[in-house]
Image 1 (cartoon, one colour):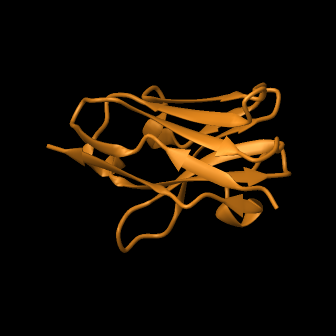
Image 2 (cartoon, rainbow, N blue to C red):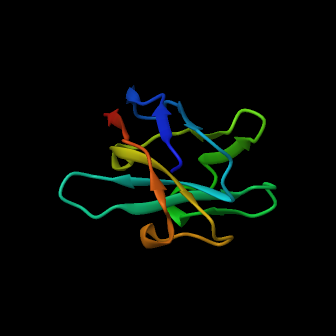
Length: 120
């Protein structure tokens, strides 16, 4: 059972930045970030494979968010810049044993989530 613990959420003004971290109890092949706004379904944000050779982003965050991982620390990061009000959501870290995993049902383990609020 892989345990995931997110941190780094908070409140920031439009145009600001936040860095989310997710510490895993062990290394998994693909690590991803999802987000869920109130009343909406959980949606894919970004994913990165073990070697960092394969990285995927949803179109709405390309050029603003950067996912990275440090396997020595079993940690994945999500650097979020130029934040917009529509980025407001609970952000979840997840782990999968598939290479190209962008759907929630492809992930086996989930963190508890961290709130990100972007105020205008």
